[in-house]
Amino acid sequence: MGRVLTGYAAGLGLLTLAGLLLNFEALASHTTSQFNLFLILLEAYTPLLTPLSSATGSPMIGGGRPLGILPLLAWILTSCILGFLLESGEKAAKVSFLASASILIIWIGSLFLSAPAWPDHHTWLSNLNKLSGDLISRPVDLSLILVGPLLISAAIGQLSEELRSKALERDLEERYRLY
Image (cartoon, rainbow, N blue to C red; front, side, top):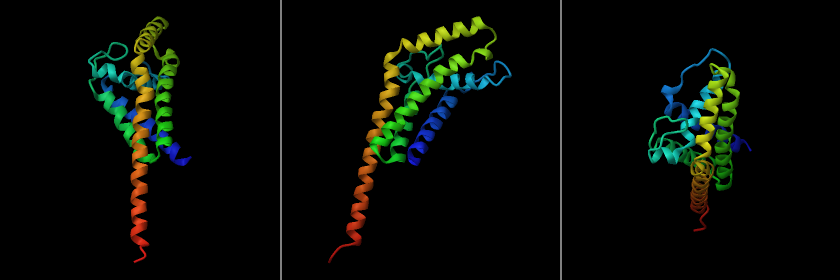
């Protein structure tokens, strides 16, 4: 259970860091309140939600500039790291899905919980409508961020588990040879 929690924290942390680095110039403070955290999370996770669209040159959610293949690489690298870290296909798949679903849920929650940080109610509602409409209009990206990392991390986790067991078996054979 400890490795799973460590993997989940690592996955969520790596994806959050990648989102912050990808959308660094958009991180501007709207107000000086505690609700800025939700705006930061919203702006950090926004580029991560459309990796395939961004790779094809479409603007990210909300009309931001496309970031190319970088969001897709962030998902792939994080999935590979989780697979290597957990060394189990089953655990890596679960953790990867949990991290992906958490990013999506935190992004949706941040849309609503950031309401007090927006200048007025109309601005918040128009941004909420625009961002949620953009997200829903890209079902391929939604399915990719939920299923793609799961498959990649499961494959890498299974492969690293097999390599580790073969190395251990080879080590035991060398130690305990009868001749």
